Length: 286
Image 1: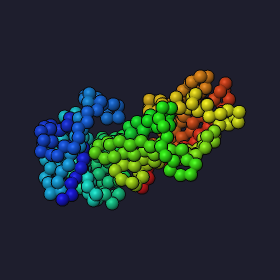
Image 2: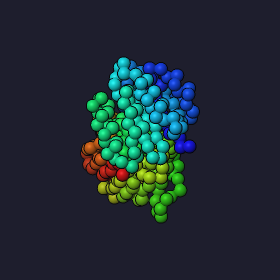
Image 3: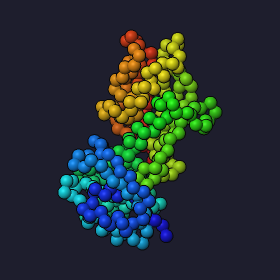
Image 4: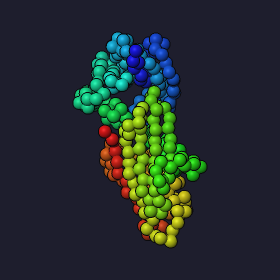
């Protein structure tokens, strides 16, 4: 029998005792941030559960009736197998065909009317932007930006590679960064969720404009700047903050668009002179 797997936030339910009826795979308690948009709570208790295929319709109805609407109307939980994806709101259940993009659009239109931010919504490629952003920040802090992290085996001739993976909301998340070169380099970051099909990606090309400079500049300012990823909410969590100063160098980053489709420009100055520039672009992959 095929099982449905998903995550229930205990604080989203009027009565969470129903969770005892499920096969609970894991429980994670996380601190609430601005992304969660639930300031009346300090933590979320997230249970990853399995539901048998022959019971999913009944449990979907019961969970729908238990979702708490005291503080907001946009709590939801969702469960999926290889074919279908159930998204459960208060008194409303969507059964989505995972191969039909229009099914997801109907669900998202309903959720937006409830006031749910788009970045928190399930989408066609099963990678809500809020989940992506949090994962990317962890992945970047655990790879190139962190000087103490070792490279993994190169995936292509002449490449340098970093790899990071973890499990979030019941599915494996994988980040892989591959680049070529040193003071002039190009590369690509890719995110996978729950399969070997890429869900999100970013390409980048960086150039050190002063030939007398070595890769030391990258260690003096670039890596420390990238360790600040996500702390400046005025730019996307793709590289570093809008501005960062280290050892006499000025780092800047600007971005346009959102995580689904974006461009970005990174620059480093020394004594007011531009000495390094990087351009990046990317977004969701379907």
